Image (cartoon, rainbow, N blue to C red; front, side, top):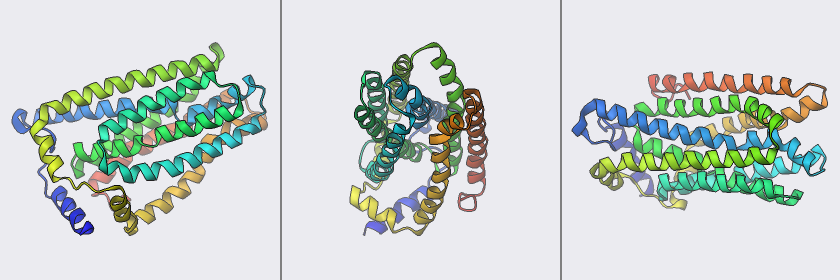
Length: 316
């Protein structure tokens, strides 16, 4: 019975009209495109701003943080490991549980909680406090991708989602591309505590703008919202998890993601420490990370349209 309800939902998605289910047809196709563009811009604003308070920022500033507390750089290893363990556990659990909650509220909770945790970092004075806040930061960030994926699924049809996800991925990579440069510049002028407080304020402001904008846009499509809520399959946490793990495609993607993560997290997490130990300057590290993330911008930009054009499966 669980699989039957899910298959019916997929069939409805395939046979859905080209117009978005959450946008009223009263304004025609042009109004639909405008509202879709605004939704995507607001999602990109939140997605990009959240990257300011994510793992790359923490890893790039960690040597400065540890030095200010008179700890050796090797102490950062425990912090990075705890970050990855926390994120690895929290993200799939929250991904499975996101089907049973309001995606927009989950997204806003993730962003505001992230800003709050980031605001607490300047007030730490011991290694165990840094470790606890780092774990909480990763846990607060974990609901963000599931919530965004759910909103993209609700707002966009199957043939539109590749472009939407590509735009969000490119935004994330673009922010990560500029982040090393901005951090290097700001840390030369301000103490790391000031930088962290500024980032927390920016994340909270962007989350507020995103929440107000999306609630405002959704208020224009009350009837369509009611219809999609009636059509959607509301799976519980364990039902959703069981449905996911029984799919062979999920395990194929999980294997690919695992191998990519070994390379990605290793480079992002240790590159500054490695460059410092072998004698490279901070500018060399910044240049490398800029090139690394710029490649992500190009890849994300191409991947979405390619997925839409090839109907997804060949691209995967």
